[in-house]
Length: 243
Image 1 (tube, one colour):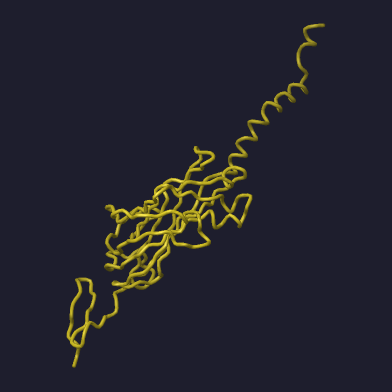
Image 2 (cartoon, one colour):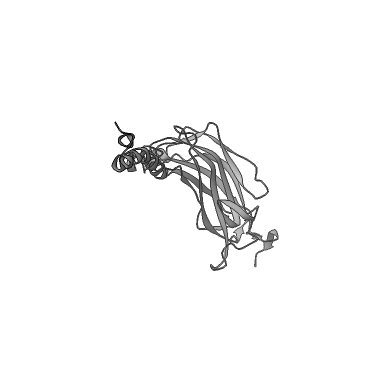
């Protein structure tokens, strides 16, 4: 056989190159379709008054995508934070406005459409310098597979954790978070610091959310036959009633 006949033909070289290249091209395409992600959404009344006490909620939802990775996997939610009042920010407060709300008594909300943390109990930390509190579960909150997974909408309840808590309105915000609206607005922000795929631990993400709340002065409350209690920006006063 001559030396020339040992060289691969052009067509053979192209086939070999295609066989070696295809797996390299396909793997990144599959990874690009997957990802760990979610939402952490606080819910307050749209309008509250100084002196009010109400129930708020924080709902954490697994929205991971990619089948079989990561939408069909369970996701651990670690670091559950709420900033009840903030002048500016997304997830994390960039311009704190502290002391507007006092948050206490967190618990599982008992919502049949949010069952991921149905067996969890929670405590709440003291506010940090930005007014942010952390909801601390007795054990790690684990969210079920996403609605983007094989189970579709049937996964919704298991992919959600809803925490209920008590909120007392202490004072008006110092800074209006939205000058385009009448009254004084503040932002309630929530975030989960780490979402981690339990079947693929190197796959992680975060969750954030928020809403705008209008805060107004409270209405006068009658406290007796001779006075009424009025909450103002400088404190609480007993004013005589007109005979």
